[in-house]
Image: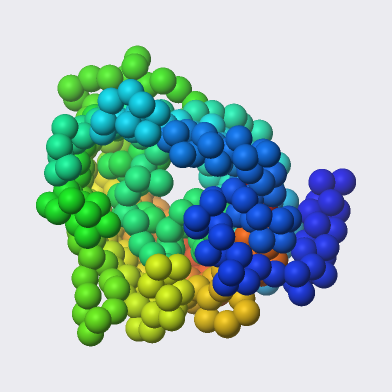
Length: 437
């Protein structure tokens, strides 16, 4: 029933294409974020009779969205069935200075939940083709609080932050490829650097420092943080806090102006002192010691860039450009040894469709395959390197109603299934509907 409703909603969205927002509506939304008529305002529920804009002026905002995805493996992979799933997200922000309390304080809270399922386990790939369904936890039907942080700036140049971090929102930012699979690309490979996921949990307790080299936070930002290595969205994490279970992360991002066009360069790295399970196991060692071999610590370094090649409107982010991500890890215990992705992305290329987005990307993942050394049978490896291509077009029917057709072709890392059948290149089709309330 839910799947039929999702398909019907997608068809209805396509039929409403003529009633899209225009540039004037975008300007109105920037001056009064929630005002306007049904076809031009930024959210479905509007400004609540002016009350929502009044709250925003006082530093209090509430933003909610609902994202649904119907996706199927139409060729290759492990299983050809279609799956439907969705996720709801509620984010609240508070600015203490606008509220009339004290300057420099910012409180952020996020509540999210997901339901139903995805085809992530049916492609044979390590990297999920549906990022949206991973949060707050990969299995469906979860509700959790992945983010609750408080930041306090002591000057225009420096501040500190503490709480439970949603690292998917806070790190590895890129203009053309980012998020939780609800805005741009579906595949995890184009939303965050996957080599960092072992060292940096998606949701975890931590504390950090923020340095702004200039008073403009969009010009350059440097951050350092200490995080729990085992946190997740569904727990507080206090029970796992330990000096032997920490991740140390640093990241810097700077805005560039090559050839008079906006771009960004980001570099970062992390180290965890947690004890991990080693990739390579000798069955004799496991039997004799009654335990799996362990390895202390894991590290990762990562880089990304975005660069406009054409800017139609800098203030609105309209134009197109290139993006790329690259990462490297120790390879053991982290099986995601090297990673790279490149692509093209853009927004508002058509004059009468300023909010439409598109993206085309390619990724390659070098996998350090786990091996099992068994007497007589020798050494067995289970995985191979993985690659993928994705293309999407995000249709803004209104600023608050978006529908996105998507296609992916994946060369999966899994070599064969349990029954011995080879896992072939997978073709994945999908459609996404998103409502912003």
